[in-house]
Length: 244
Ligand code: MN3
Image 1 (cartoon, rainbow, N blue to C red):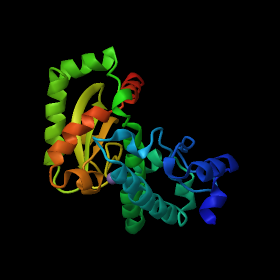
Image 2 (cartoon, protein in one colour):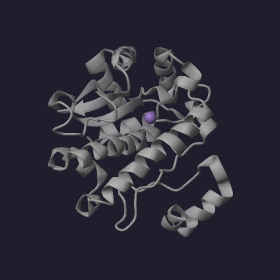
Image 3 (cartoon, helix red, strand yellow):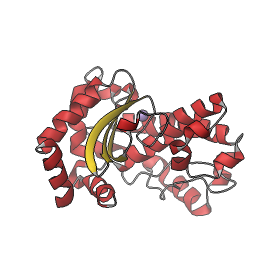
Image 4 (cartoon, rainbow, N blue to C red):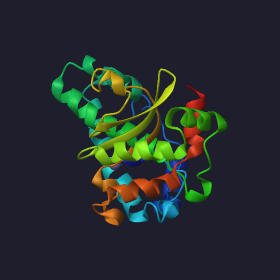
């Protein structure tokens, strides 16, 4: 019952009506005071990214993995009301200020997990709606990587070489595009946790945890990375780049 009580009436009605189709309302960027973080809304259905990302992977990834990060984050923040009032990105950018090591690690892993997945879902779009980078972003890609193929090659190498679980990122650092990768649920906004050389404003993110691709691609991470480019939301990426 607790979760249902946290939803507003409109959202609850939509969830009841649409079941697992997830045409829900936009998610909150921060927990409203007195409430908790909730699973975000996707602007597409689970099967909409087929065949590049399969519906079953999407469903498990959102409803099980992402949901677990949110649940753990909410449990941790319930013990730290001063932190709970802050936007998640502010907490993540100031993790060393969290004195309790256990709480800090829990927020690092689960707050990072929530932030990263929320960002990742918005970085995806059905192939038919994937669009193209803005002329401004295209110029920056050409200038930094030589071409779109150059970006894909460099990004693919970073995503392939990330040992174990983690993320590959295209970030803006000092006004320039850069590729980096992080372990586990770390991300480029985690000052004092991630090396300064890897900090920046995320433009694209790719989840390379096995849970993100194993059902369809098994051990073939490079095939998943190559397929992912078909479902990149270039409109979202271009918007992030334009507000740098
Ligand atoms: Mn994941």
